[in-house]
Length: 341
Image 1 (tube, rainbow, N blue to C red):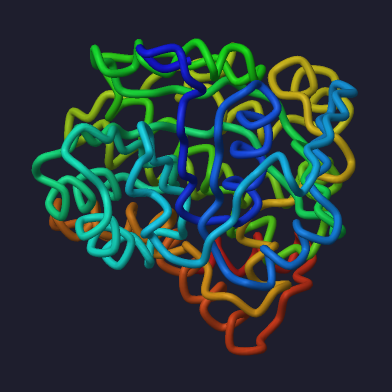
Image 2 (image 1 turned 180 degrees about the vertical axis):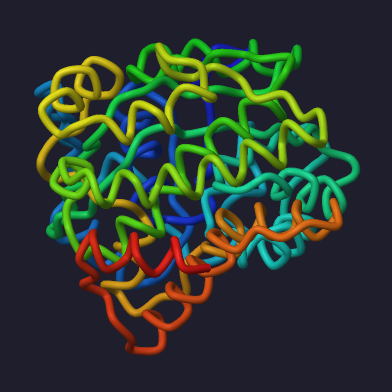
């Protein structure tokens, strides 16, 4: 509820898998939610409503009348909160669109991959409170208005007094917010885990099947070790988001399959439907966010006067896949390619 007792008004700018899932859960919890996205998504929701499931058995339905949909930013004019969930490449346009639509009292939350999207929004929205948030789990669009959370984790958000106004509705939606003062270190930790996105997209496999193969995990470990070496050299802190410290995760990834099945499942639950958002983008013929994930490591290396050949090669391979190149690498072939860089 808002301060005057009415339902909280929330606009979700970017009705992709994450946006529809978050918006649907919030609407089911009593918020007045409007999704802003492409007309084809609106048509799907008008026909089917939303079905929101997760790996723990939740199955939530929101009828078409229970959630608003718009194709432009004007609907956000009365929003108390705007959640931005567009792909990173769309952030400048999202900021410009919102600048002409929302008031100074509206809080904006960037629920996006990468490191700099909240800063881009702040530049476009200097009068608004803009907070970065981190969505740790994967959401798969299964068609017919059905969005499935395939891995676990709780939302993290920058610590700020403005969070108090909406944290209750997120709790009620089963999406508790963990406020963090060290949010940049949280973003780096998420990015390290997301280095698997490129490997998963190039494998063409569900996440759990890909991670069950030691050669693919070794490929991810190469990318993570390269990133961790750069972060250590620059004195950049990385938060602990899993039971293991981030520096230990590459070692875990290289253990034999039988060991990983036991230890890995304790660290992060992933169901058979889960795939990375980068795989989803390739499947849909969309531009991926590889420049904001593996590419961040390449840019960090350049700023340090060093190279990041493994992550640079992953960027190159994903770009080739976007153009119609190989999207079904075997683990052994991909690992050999990355080791040769």
